[in-house]
Length: 135
Image (cartoon, rainbow, N blue to C red; front, top):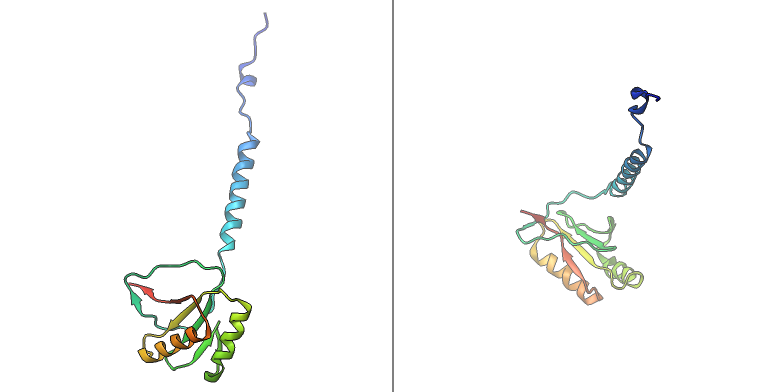
């Protein structure tokens, strides 16, 4: 009768399949996390705050920004006051159902914001959201 060597029978084995699973999981995690890492350059304005503000996710919003010194920016490019209708009309021909996000500094007079909103409605903009900060 032959006795087995117990030392050879209980040697630990390196399990390669679970290691591959863990490495694949880490690879996917880092790939997905880098998709959301991008720098967004914007102009600093003081947005008004609202308790009922919600975050909306939209495909390609067009932003219209009014600064405290009454400058108007469309997608972070300054536009002259007389060129608003031409710029918005051109944007609507390229993206007819695109939502607009209106960001106005809290120091802007209420009447100027309403005038801009009225101009946007007259030009045919259908979806307008106001940007606010959450309280």
